[in-house]
Image (cartoon, rainbow over all chains, first blue to last red; front, side, top):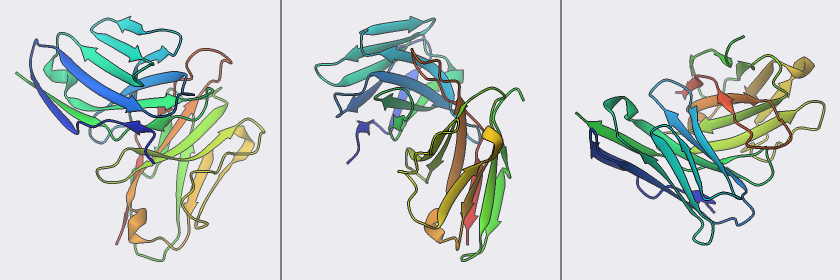
Length: 111
Length: 116
């Protein structure tokens, strides 16, 4: 039973446009959500987080939206840059320690 | 150190052999995690250590897998009698549990294990 799902394995976007990466979850007890970016042969690096008491968190070009009623979160990257090409993982936890990760979405930003 | 350090970065072994993977967490981080990523899969939780508490081993896939953390710092993940399905990238992460707010994990670069 996959509690965190990223249903789009890949996404291609033109440079300068918006990238929207989606994530769905099933456990209503999840209260913290993280997004990570992973380049080949490197470990995942933290991008942005959101708590369940918020519906939006913004950091520069990255914004995460949380819709608790739909159990859905999304990561918006605007404007997209070629260096954003990577695999993006969402992760969720209830309590603060054990994160469940999705299967990832490979983003390709075309120059 | 400045980041989470893992060794070896690559390990090729024969089926049936034992392997040890090492993780050096960020100094001062009390929590340490092992995840693995198999080909085309997400990050699968394996085990979690926090201070002197009993580890959460709920993600270990079989009793061939074990892990220890000595002195609250370095951790070793041991896989006995390796099987081909153990082939994956094993990722270690550490964090400082602040008690509130998001617990952000910092990952190492991983140890890629290939079982022939």
